[in-house]
Length: 262
Image 1 (tube, rainbow, N blue to C red):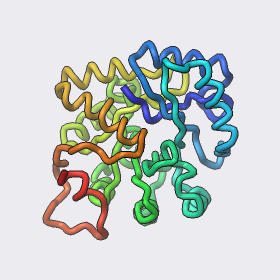
Image 2: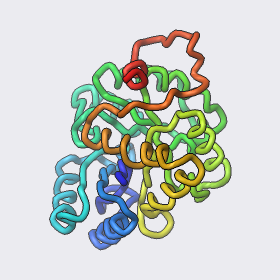
Image 3: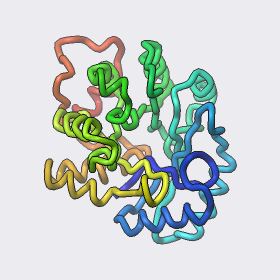
């Protein structure tokens, strides 16, 4: 399995605190059947995103886990004004492995209408936004249909393994199930922060997906789509999403037709 959202690099944010914790998390990932990890430290007002330091920390772990775990770099990109301004000047600075997929996180307590324009702006600069853990965002739990326009414009959705397993409450689990059943989900990722409360628990989530939705869906969300994002490749053919009101034209052209017409 391939984990595209993982706070593995130590001393950068609220993930691994030291090298020992990074090593423990990497060992847990390997034991969990994870073959690739995109290390995605936060970029927000609290945590400074430093590409040079990220590469140095990544290099330490790559040397220790050579042949056992393939590591890459990305970012847990918060949709702030400063981040968006910097991304417009450095389009690949925050994306997964310097390619075109970009993890984006919304604020927990307010998602202004300008966020839609921000997503269009990312798309117009060649980024493919991946909306992270909407099932854990109170604003999106209350109004999940806000994602319809974003999906229509080419955004993708990543849910958290722990949410599917009930570790973020019943509402998060129920929303995960609803989004999967509507074919709105493209990735499942651990969003691991440690080995206790927020571990890299992809195997258990994959097993739940197999049992509830079948191996094809489980492998699509945990292996095939994440592999495409990790290497910056087009997604394989996806099932048609439900409830996007196909009779309503999208405000702007996006990637949706290309994703679902292969």
